[in-house]
Amino acid sequence: MSTRVFVARLAGIDVFDPGGEQLGRVRDAVTMLRVDRQPPRVLGLVVELTQRHRIFVPMGRVTRIEPDQVVLSSGTVNMRRFERRANETLVLTELLDRTVTVRETSAAATVVDAGMEQNRTRDWVISRLAVRTQTPRLSRRRGQLSQVDWNEVDGLALQETRQGTDTVVSMLSDLRAADVATALLEMPEKRRLEVAAALDDDRLADVLQELPEDEQVSLLAQFTDERTADVLEAMDDDDAADLLGEMAQDDQERLLQLMEPEDAAPVRRLLTYEDYTAGGLMTSEPVICLPDATVAEALARVRHPELSPAVAAQIYVVRPPAGTPTGRFLGTVHIQRLLREPPSALVSGLSDNSTASLRPSAPIDEVTRHLAAYNLVAVPITDDHDRLLGAVSVDDVLDHLLPEGWRERDDDEEPARG
Image (tube, rainbow, N blue to C red):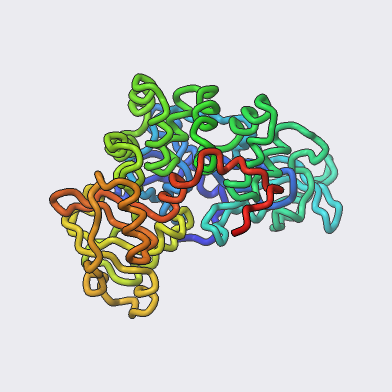
């Protein structure tokens, strides 16, 4: 995959699903400008389907960008018509042709293209700009074309003196989701809603997962059902199920109907389990490998930046199919074991099945004792046919064992001494 891609060159190229079927063509890219000079993140692509129907495809769904094609990780996409949200900027439509000032020379220039690339956290950011220096109006000569880093020009950042929602969102952009959640709780209700509404779906999903469930419900109640469904799709399945579990049955079903079927299905399964049981605590998306996967392939999967350390600590080896509920569960392989073996080794030869799995009906105290007794960071959950349903990690258990309101504890409060 290309390490740097200029957005203007993407315009009009074909978009394919993993099976090679054409879905549409790229028409634009969506970004969110910042109050500082840090490169803005590319949120996704605007893809035009038949009859000029345009949809939004998050960058997380993009697996490859080649000179003549974009390949997605799944053929299932959200068919809702694309609408630009507040604080979003369309790169081709709104960013190109903007006048900027090159800081080194103080020369006025026009943006003619924007180069995006993946950073260390695997996010796509606009890191470079192609600019053409402006010439006197009556001159027949074209200005010089050059490339500059995003932070080498003035004129594209949000106004730093503007104390509106844009500024607050930009100031929060580099914080961890848990810190953004804390900041939201300290805001007046009106500002809290404005800031939450301005966050993109993935970021809002991460932040919501760090808020108390009553606050999650309160915030989402202010959004349209369509926006709420988009955010639920971006949340971890277990967190989405916990959130929906706080809502009335009619509201649950209405939102599940609006979600994409492949996103709604695992959430529906989780909602069938009782609270404070293994089924109610587990994630249905642990790291799963088939027996013929190599160590190199397994390590590539646990490197995914969206995985929590506890979930990424071990993989689960199963017979096909690989989606939960899987085929027969064969065992687990800890990441430390993967690091000690040659990349070409098969995970089937490394899996350990000496530690029993638990059933989804197991109560939380049994899950806790199991984790502690075997010094585990996660435990597999299987059904009566030994099919893997999911996994419960230490952080899932801690989140339910801590007292209610622990997130709101005053940071200045001195912890109790033993």
